Length: 512
Image (cartoon, rainbow, N blue to C red; front, side, top):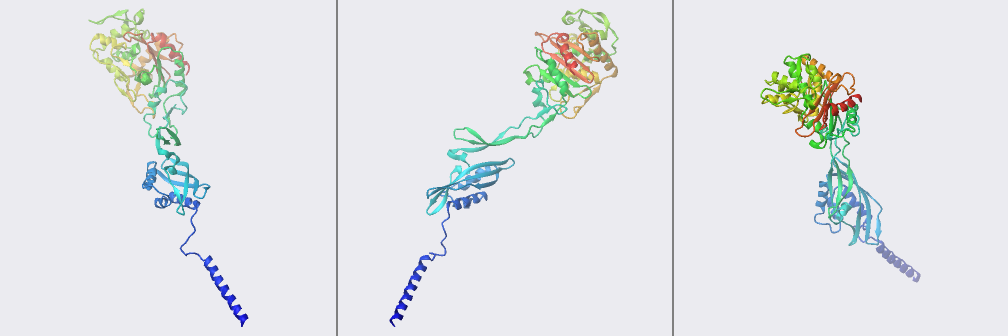
């Protein structure tokens, strides 16, 4: 009996011990879970941020500011952010209460592209739970201490004009001041953008740049060889000068070498209006030919001519007059008195202005506006002065190149620098007999007249001009054509056209 009692006691003790062990290892409640570590909290925060779940983000932040959600929304709205990708780095513990998780991010800005950045999540253990210690620099380090981020427009490159063959303009071409005008009607060359971090003192640094589009190429009518020849012909010329060359049968500008100085934005060759002097005799001769004279008509070239009740006119530089000659002979030696006398006699009814308008005067042209003007005369003196390119007559080098082109082609054309040739239209055709006469007379200037000693290539035709300026030294001119290339040379205050402009024109043509 005693042994049975002992055995029963042992069984009871073991049952009590077993029950105690069960109590020790039983969970305290089915609702209890392990506390999340800092890595899990950080990962959950980044996932919520990627998904734009601002409520979940806020619950994971210790002491989230009242405008927590609005700050995130405003940041994305102001910079037009359309997506966000985040990649966590390696968690770093700092004792038992603090931790940091560096991370990389890529924001995509609408219509611009990717903006990579890096920042750090700081975490703290609060009341047994890990929370994110949020600050503005969590969004981006540039926001620390009151900094801000702005999107700044970066102007795109200016459209780049190129020659008709698609090549760049030659170096130091003299056409540089026209590049902006040549690209003025090109749409959408575009701008780039940059994100800048701006400190509270106003200083800024670039965070990322979104490059502007590459410069668009504008195909112009300019010929690289002709432009190079024009530019090099002006090398070594001390006075302000310009050469304009056009394709006679289309009005296409082939070259524009402008070294007239900074006036008119450096575009004096098309915007500057200068008295053309005797180069205007091409227009006067056209008017006289249309009134019945021929290149062989006998005319007088006296040393002095005085219109009725007018003032005396003389020849440029007091040059000797040949007396009686042909109209071609008077044109070749640039006899002022012949053209004054004949104009007073034959053009008093307004024929000079009408002829000038056939050559583009008093006419708007695309780009510079009016390229030359001549007014109705009020007296014989005014008409006589207009007839030799003085008084009311002014023109740009472009305008006078178009005059020469009209003689070569037989029609005046609007000038064209970009786009389709001839888009500006063509003027009325000149009478055939007038054109034939002008061509013969302009050839005589080069073969036997004021430009005969320059060594021009065979087939060159032209006209010299020496224009009084009202006090300063005369402007020197030469206009002409060779083949389909028509041109004008102006040397501002250069003196005699034969001495200053003709050698430049010869160098230009011989270089083609």
